[in-house]
Length: 271
Image (cartoon, rainbow, N blue to C red; front, side):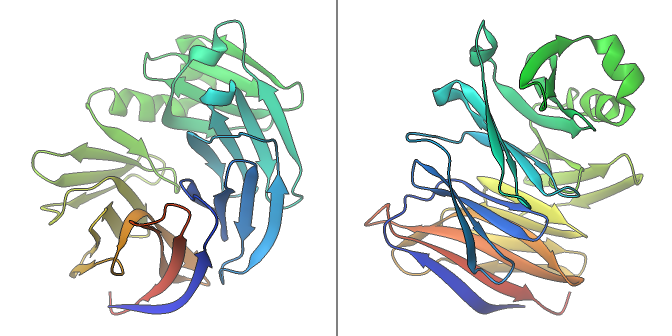
């Protein structure tokens, strides 16, 4: 059962980017930066980065509350520390601006390792604001968990790394999703999702499946399907763990006005 407890409305913001880092919700502030909300959907920080910023994807570090924004249209990546609100822009050049990064990555003490869909690995050093290509051999030796995920993911056509470090292996034809966590040696199979989906998220045995016209929550004992408000479409859905209790956070946008968006919080009961 889903019970709505709060919402955050925007009437002049074309929200297309939506992510959860630890217990903070991050959304784009039109095309100038990001807004940071707390776990009660209160706005706690408006962070202006630069005019025209467009975020394509992101890479999360929940334990240290940091995020890397990939902005290929701006030929850069942007590191944001959610605790201190400090950020830095790393410009991509000499061919690096043409890379397309996959959802597989791993953070380390100096920065993080990113992978591409061409099976290449790149190391980002945040202190030096630099990026360099590294070999498969170095990944296999120094970043064993990432290498295991990479070896598993390359067997499949469609995969996505999730916020808890698991990967989702997606079979669109049969509406099946396998969640694999090599670190904890856990595999969770969700069969026969009732809707097609454009976005998924998973946390602690709960899977959220999103398409524009419906959102499905799947768990061990069943499933729940919900629908957007009239004249709205769903864009994203994320599971938030708050004091050990699961909450669903959704982003939806008006069909009539792209600058009109709503973020809603639902508590998930009776799992």
